Length: 120
Image (cartoon, rainbow, N blue to C red):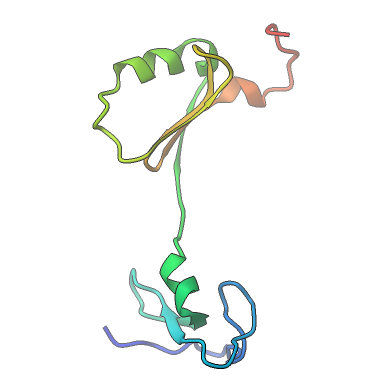
């Protein structure tokens, strides 16, 4: 894939475009580019910044009042090997505010409503 320079934009050859810190003498500089399509050069970056840079995304799965009912049942029914990364924000041993499976985030829509909670 050919690297395509940024059009009408210039990047600072003295700054890493990811961490915005200046390059020190002797540091390895690399050209960060779009890997997923155009090949457009985003700018110069420290080698470590470029290797550690990750574009994060998630898909929200919104379930109403899932904290009080559905999350617990969903987690009990999910096989352990279904996801590489599982994250949980618990309230207690049986209630979960949010949990994630890889790029899916299961959220409770009830917690975003402006209604006094019955749990208090």
